[in-house]
Length: 177
Image 1: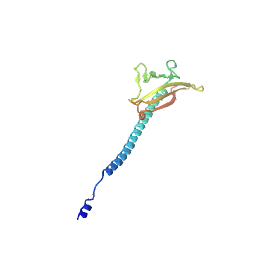
Image 2: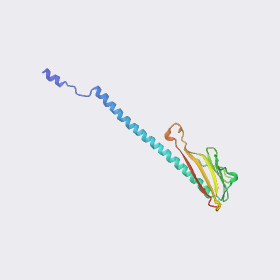
Image 3: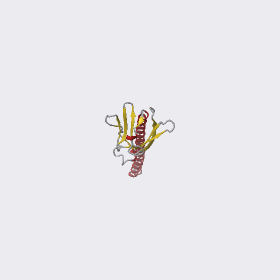
Image 4: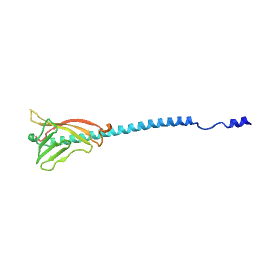
């Protein structure tokens, strides 16, 4: 009878070693899942920063090209070519348009109106430089420009996913010449 009782007393359940082993495996699996998720979030943030910077730079480039194409002539006396900060003064129907880099703020001024900032909230335009070329054949005026567009988020200097900069170079010929 004692033999029967000892066989029935066999331990059923999980030992302390097995519990620690299962917890360790669970921690490793959850750590890998968390790390993977964190990398996906970081990559998504970086892609958003790149998209916003490129889109803002393209909008700025298109704005400059539209102003140049609609001008009748370039006011060379009031323009600064070949150096940063750049300044471009254009003569248009009914007055003038001036685009100027005021050290981190790009402004557009029409005639005697107050200057209007054409900056973006999270993208900074740096090193705006204008160049001018005149065709020898038909004296067509061409204004070139270059600038750097850089993401400018609060605290971005500490986190690499918020840092992005891209150089742009373009230009346009004056159509109303």
